[in-house]
Length: 336
Image (cartoon, rainbow, N blue to C red; front, side):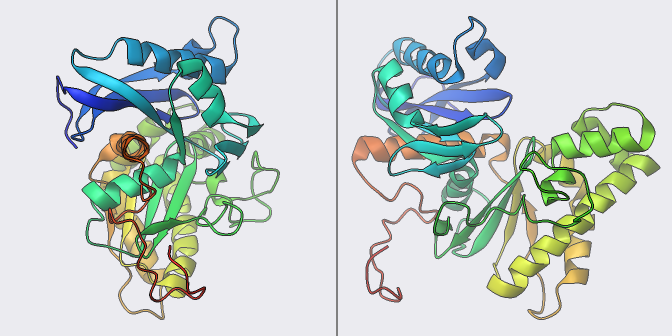
C-alpha cells in the first residue's frame, strides 16, 4: 500500500495506537493510505477526558474530515497489550494502563462506526507478511523495537497467540533474574534491556547523561564506547532469546520493525553475529532483516483489519492473505 492523495470510494480510518502517540490515516478499499499523521496521546486527553473517549472523538473527526469521495465505513484499530480480539476487549496493556477495557465497543460508540481491534505488533506482522519483507514466508518472527520490545511469531501464515493471548511475546522472557525491575513486576525481562526506554535508561545509568534512544543508537554507530556497550548487552540478550526460538521452531526469517528500527538498522550486523554464535542445532540461523514498511507497518496492518471488517472476512490477520480454511494438517481436524 502506498501513501497517496485522493482515494475515492468506501474506506476506513486506520489507527496504530502506541504508548506516546497514535498514527492515523484514511485507507480506501483499493489499499492506499491517505493523509497519515501522528497525534500525541497527551493531546487526546488534554481536556481532562480519558484516553478511550479522546480516541473515539479523534476517529469521528477523521471520518467527518475524510477526503472528498472517501466514504468512511469502519475503523481498524491496532493497540498494544493482551487482547480478546473476538470480544474486542483489551485484557491488559501496561503501556496504556488499560485492564479489561472494551476498547472496540467504546471507540465504536464514540465514533459511530464499527471497529475491529487487533494487536499492534500482530498488525505490523500481518502487513509485513502481505506487503513487506516477509512476503512468501509462512513461519517467521516479527520484532517491533519501540518504547519497549514487541514481537509476533507467525506460524503457517498466521500470528500465533497461544491459549490466552501471550503467545509469541518475547519482551518479558527473563534474561537476568537479578536485573532491573520491569513494569510487569519481574526482574531482568528482555524489555528492560532492549527497547527505547531500556536503552535510554541503561545509557543514563552508565554515563549520567540522559539521551533519547535514537541518539544512543546513533552514538553507538559513531563509535561511542558507552553507547556501544549498552547496545552490545541488549543485542547479546536478544540473541539468547532468539536462539531459543530458532532452535525450537526454526523460523525462516526475522524481521525487525517498530519506531526505533530505522535507527537500529546500521547496528543489525552485531545482532546477526550474536545470533549465529548462539544457534547450534539448526545449521544457518535465519536472516535478520529490517521491516520494509518501516514505522508504518502497524498502520498498514490496522488498515488491513479495517478493510477485512468492511468486506466481512475473517482472514485479516493472516500474513499470506488467505482465509486459512484448508486445515488439512491441523491436529484438531478443523479449519484455521
